[in-house]
Image 1 (cartoon, rainbow, N blue to C red):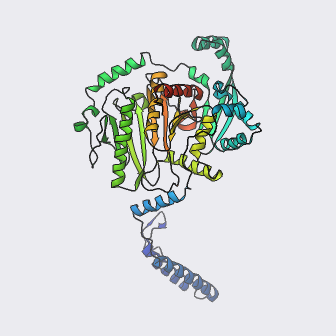
Image 2 (image 1 turned 60 degrees about the vertical axis):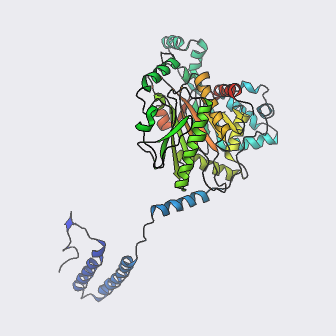
Image 3 (image 1 turned 180 degrees about the vertical axis):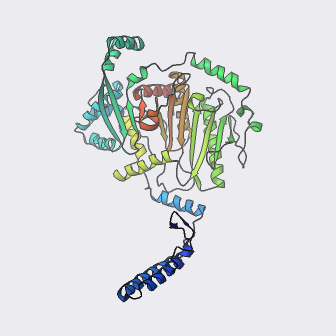
Length: 493
């Protein structure tokens, strides 16, 4: 008798059948069983029952139609609805501090001179905070504990006299060599976003192949050497345009990215070639006119694209492909890109734990309480407690307005002019475009970090890529420079 697999193509003693052959194979097998066991009626009856069940299941499987695949647009629209509905309506962002830093230091921390704050004292400050008898201090401590965790540990090592002598030459001070034997390390983690930073300012004093030429002179020479062959200086003929054309402003213009990262991806460029020659007027024109117009144009053509992003790397050491200042602009649908969306989700978790509170408002207030924040109108900049790189400053404002971009300019000038950090990277997200009921409404949010320039060693290692953020600059040092920049360069409101 022919078996169920006899007429099928077999490889390695296995039959390969399609969905349409399934029923025929079982029918053949069942008939073979009937012929084989026709003398044993009990067993034959059991075989018939099993066969009937299998046939019923098989028929249901064959007759059930497969669901039609959803179209891409339907999937995106449903995803956008699901994304928005998963968020609550947050209170509007506000940078208005309920109390000045002096009040927190005297009332909550038990310290009179709030200017004396250093990151290495953060654990002591939080401990004093916990012991405060004031209700308002305890309320803010609960919010701090929801967001941050702080620990201080000591890393010990043994050094031979020869090695001590070598370190004395490198560091220049005996107290620093002594400090190497027992190094205090501060770990700050954001429990909601998962960001984690290890601070050890002593690491910043290592020899890492610093630049040998004057920084500004080196960049001046780089700008002079590259201007004659710069594609962006001849943008009308040497760059692509978006299908709807270009955006032209007095000090800036747009160009389509020739090698797109996403569907809508363009560049916003200054008309000046020099990477350090970006005035406040030029910067505000770049963002408020060119970038804003480009995002609005894309949204008018494709309303589902609502979430604007911008990134800016200044100088090749920061990852810039060309010396000419250029900002990448992208806009997404459904949600922000993953890193910022992760922060947005963290803000939602915070709101649910503290109803009626806005995560970004309280994040700002915490940094204000620690004396790490400075405001300019509606915008606030603070030296971040969980920075990704050295000298990170976060800027937040309710809207992407003049205050926001002026503050961005002041932070950049603090890095370039006051701290001699000419290379930097910036990431910006703007509030969603179009109609919104306030669900998961992001404020204008920027992160600015310095990058090393002119050295032999990259400022990004496998530690930062795969393990944890390592920062060697005390946030208080960064804050003092930014505060001074705002006071000197900012026009009083």
